[in-house]
Amino acid sequence: MSTLFNFKLTVLLSFFTGFLKRLNLVKIEYRLIMFTEILYIILLIVILVSSLVAIFSREVFKAAIALAFTFIFLSAVYLLLAAEFLAVIQLIIYAGAISILILFAIMHTPAKIENISEAKIFDYKPHYLQAFITGSIIFIILMVIGFIILNELNIQVYGMKPLLKDFANVLFNIKDVVNGGGRFILVFELAGLLILASIIAAVTIAKKD
Amino acid sequence: MDNFLVNLTFIVSLIMISAGITGIIYRRNLVAILISIEVILNAINMNFVMFSRLKPSLNQALDGQILALFNILIAAVEITVGLAIIFAIRNTIKTSDIDKLNNIKENPEDSL
Image (cartoon, each protein chain N blue to C red):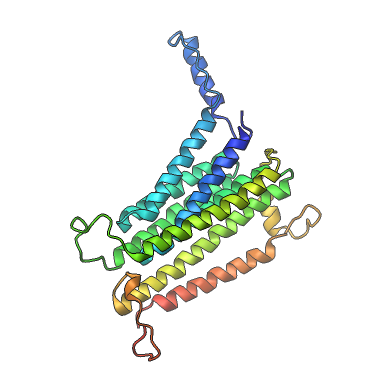
């Protein structure tokens, strides 16, 4: 059993199977111990496939929809990994705002005139090889460095679950210095300044003269 | 089982990061390049949240999630300014293909 996860769906399922057994409807004893782990692996596979579709799809609209799917399933992964606040933030900002912004931009940019069905499926251009080589070199470098670090690391899950009040304590509470309160308050203020600057920059750049 | 799941998450996020970098070079559409950058940032976020589960104290477990929070914020800022630049290009030379954006010359009348 893995302790990586926040809650066990096994509890819920065993409630239902026990209920069915009590009604003598189901004779077979279900053993769904690994259910959360299997759900997590399925979620990872869905995230991987939809992000690859988002990157390599030929139609930009399909790519944007696949990106929205990536965001939503990633928020489910955050829920399993005991980050409920981040899951909600992910749903609001990414799946709510950024997907809509990207769809808005696709709607307002000119499409290519050429017919997609008449275009060749794979016509070779020189930057394809450059992209493939760069991607594989970065993959190999990150893989080697990452697995050296992961071998050094003794993987043990402690299962600390931060609550919303801990977020508030770290972000805002300057008086509680002993427990690390207010550690990130300067970064938080700078982030607000950054958002203001980006809004001004976006309006200034995109406005029609 | 923990070891396997941590390694699996790590490999998935590595594939997403390198595929995103491949996509930045491979794609010719400006919006598709922004989509690739979003995929990279999400993969990094997934790693932050997963590794913060391995920390022994509450403060260290919070650090990963707070870094992921600021990463989401940076992604929002980046997509805002990037889409504004795409709109500016749309207004001036009416294209979304980066192969046509090669006319930045020394004469300011020829440039964007």
